[in-house]
Amino acid sequence: MPTTLLQSNLPGLELIHRGKVRDVYALPGNRLLIVATDRLSAFDVVLPDPIPGKGEMLTQISNFWFGKTEHLVPNHLLHTPLSEVLPEGTDLKLYEKRAVVTRRLKPVPVEAIARGYLIGSGWKDYQATGSLCGITLPAGLQQAQQLPEPIFTPSTKAAVGDHDENVSFDAVVAAVGSELAEQVRAATLSIYKWAAAYAAERGIILADTKLEFGTDEHGKLYVMDEMLTPDSSRYWPADEYRVGISPPSYDKQFVRDYLETLDWNKTAPGPRVPAGVIDGTSAKYAEALQRLAGIVLD
Image (cartoon, rainbow, N blue to C red):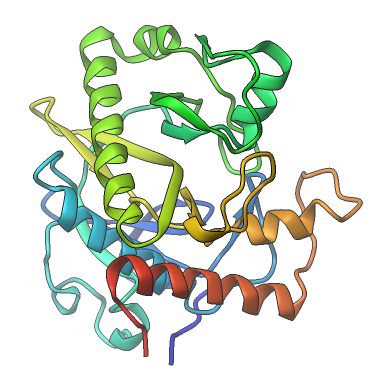
């Protein structure tokens, strides 16, 4: 059975960051231990109810994609056995499918987003302005319509409880310099196009995805954190896709759609989530993991 972990507790290790989903610990040798909990965030707010097994599924699908795309962009994984770094007495079963040892990198301060379809905040921006992140799009596009070409639509990196904001490529250049900005854009689109083609062969549309990058002491770029998970991507079953509506999905849109029915202002604290929505969300993640990676968590 999948384990459930709302918050990690690893005495003796230095906790350096507790994010919306991941707890990050420092390790000797300029390394990190990253633990994916079962916390769920929506609209940048961490909800009070965990999704059992979610952290395990996120980690397994990230590891799958890191392996599949390392010929395109190097990643942060080090493949160090967890038994070598977890504190003595830690329940290895609780962490073995949800934790990884990685390089400790300098994060690039931007959310690197690739979009192949017009949905979510991109659809809202297009309706208001006819453009997205400074990119003018063709007139007359509909909700969920495929774009002529995938586009790079970066956003700011918000703190827990704050909301990311879409920004132009020029804003990324101003933040990190033109050379690194170009590298991040090229890497993001390369990964998206490859993964979208892979998913399409399995009857799944990868509508968009958000990636995170970091650099080492030599300035080399790595993709890090998570990759192409249901938390960071929109996956749609191809046989149920229709232009003009928000398609059913394998991601946390299932939770977002429920939250949109509530009288909630999308600020903390988040509302409780019914058991049926929790179970449905877990099933969505599990199906995506099985269909994309062929992995079933016992």
